[in-house]
Length: 375
Ligand code: 5GP
View 1 (cartoon, rainbow, N blue to C red):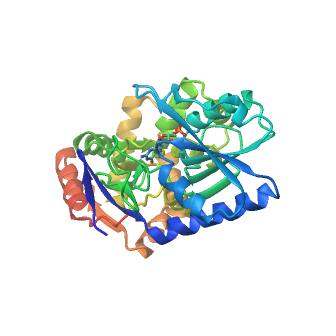
View 2 (cartoon, helix red, strand yellow; view 1 turned 135 degrees about the vertical axis):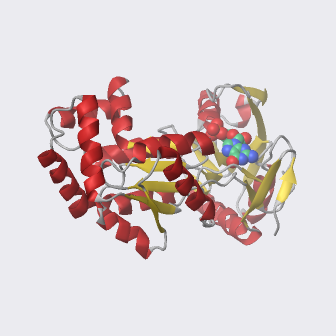
């Protein structure tokens, strides 16, 4: 299968016919078990579910009635999920019956919430939800999805009934939107290596998202978010913010589909965090492409940090505390290099020189990195 073009966008092959067929027959089996000896009223949610419902109908061997429900989600600037009913179902057809809603895909769950609240008003004996595709990472509701054909990550898919602006419904396989591929990397180096300065320049030049854990904490605390409140409690006690809180904050950022690529600064600080990050990225169908280390000799670092201490007025920036921070870095953080070295993702850049020179070296390395195919 090859990539295809629909309107202005390119889609790449994602789920083949066999996998779809297996998911559909597994759903048919699960629903048959649930039905027992009673007929099921299937509510086919149009338009997207028409192919799924037809294929499921052919697999379903017990008594079944098919009704059609059509909704339209308003396309607005907000994803508030303003859903309007275009084709309704008579109450008589549902009242006192065992009902199964057939959805092609559940994303945030907004559409489904509307469907469920409308249909339960019609007093079915019982109502269950079956969806062919489910995006657990996008789902924002609490009610359970009873029968799931296949879980998928947060990608935009078309085919097998699903459209992009009405095109693509007749594709027999599922395709997913091809993302403009950018780099996701860790900018690495000891305190004073110039990571923050460089990351900010690169972020602007390449349109990447900059994740500096320190800034992230400060923002959450300033905005009094639930995660910020948790983090503050630890910081006030003089404790380190636990990994779980940091991870949850990062999760929020990398879940944003608008993000083209990521620069991590100050994270991961330990091998354990690196393992966490790899897992987290994989969950979102992403991957760390590189760790780029800024190499600066120790005597430069001490000099730079002492200078910085003078201008920022930080009293703890004396030679002794700086040496201690560098020791901590060598002991705990440096092993992260090796972790990515083993994956063949380690790059080193000479961090001594003017900001512009170092920046050019970094950009050269970035453009030389062959991006790995995302899963
Ligand atoms: P929700 O209300 O759960 O966020 O979204 C449900 C509706 O959004 C689906 O019924 C479908 O019309 C549309 N939708 C959500 N995700 C996708 C997707 O990946 N591809 C397509 N074509 N439509 C989607």
